[in-house]
Length: 535
Image (tube, rainbow, N blue to C red):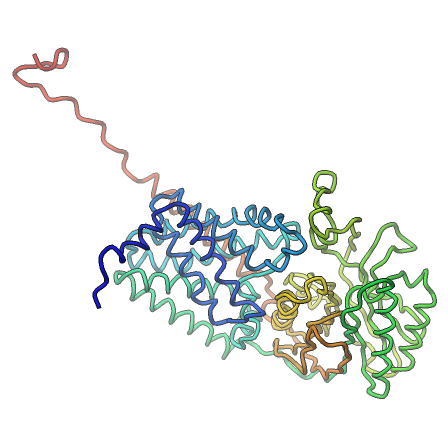
């Protein structure tokens, strides 16, 4: 069947329109969101950037390439964080447009290295430089004040064993680098024949590198025994007296664990709505639970403290005699959720979304808790995290370096109950476990709760958002340290060095480019002169 010329040219004409091209760039930037939970199309991550790369590569001008980068970044941020719409409303679009500016230089970078008909050498450079540029963007937007490292591209590979092994070597950053490198090579493959051989070689190199890590990277030494941890998930409890009724439901579920002899019972974030020093009755009820179940209980208190001004979110360990004194105050808070940046200027945001009416206070340091003596596994070192702190690789790495044998994240995503957020949040624990070689418990109020082993593999059942229950998990402990714990963010530093070297090389190339020759003077003729041409 022969397609009429007019129909073949129609898509080209549409993309030549700035408005249609802009809309297409936004849509192209949104595609990678499908690789994250809840769709969970992890394999799609390896080609999801290709349309966006092709837009930037074929941009007619550098300005248009930067615009394609910005619009694609805006689409990416909206798609990955779309579940915030009920809370931030149109303000999400504003924030996405601001964060999307981070991708404007990336669009220009893509056009610089892949524009026109890239040579074999230029393709090889692109497979290294383009992923490094993307990683630099992820590093900047991982700052807590910009929303934290949610939606890092490498995090989409949380259930892929080879990717988890990569994370143990270079963190989620190394996984991101590999994913973007494959996307870059595929974009070259579909662009034309001149550089297909180096593009295929790049894909093969990525596969070989992943295979080498899978075979030779050190695995967690699982000789640390087994610990039994119970997760208590009370489910959705709303309305008047919600905090008291949630406490009562958690108490009821914990009593059902009697006889199962867990070593540790974990409640979710904000599971206790009053300071235990001021409410001795609640502290006594928790101590009674600890005696009845034969285990210490890790709760999370979201309340105004009696010994310090302000409201804190704190992990508190309670034993048979009451609070043990082990306490961790959340350090990294959710912007426009638990605090409003520059509240004097942006305080109006509380009327648009569901930002906190009063800023939560920050803790000053991370804490490794030690389970008290008595029955159970005494002396176990537990590293607590609260809510979206589990998205920060450096926090779990620091806890592992401080001797934590078990990582615990206490979370509450009930505000986003029917969205992709609970599944996305739970998946982050798999990466933190793989990076550190330490098992991790992700306990929530309303789901999704999950437990992962030292290699990032899931252990036992996942507690969904429709469940109100308690479950006991047998968790293998591990010894030793992973390369990521030992060497830290070496991948990030390497990517920044690559970008610096590329920029320096481009600068030298521009300086060495010969200056344009001055225009030649007008030629003399028999009928003219320089002073009076034409005569």
